[in-house]
Image (cartoon, rainbow, N blue to C red; front, side, top):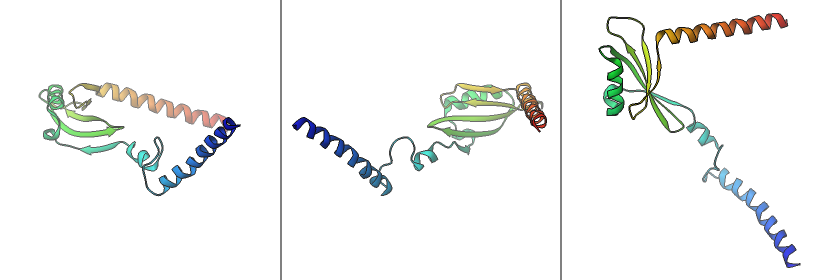
Length: 140
């Protein structure tokens, strides 16, 4: 008999905690993990233009190594889910197509996009769009 009442008490307390937690959240106290409006805003990527002087030394060295004699055109710090990466656009010496790289704060080149790769991606994107348009025309 005591065991039965223990279960009833435990279930009742458990169900009673849900409205209390909901009320506390609505009152502005600590948000529950994984889905409050504040956390959704934090997950949006943040972008900020920075100068070469603002970049940590290991990342700056990697950028200068990649630029060689070219000119660093733009550096943008992107932060998403607590991770930072520097998006860098480099104009090569003597003209030519722009090189885009991504560098971690530790100096690792995470991604490199050459003009030829960029052009291939754009062509594939155009082909996919044309195929989708063609599919829509066939469906009508």
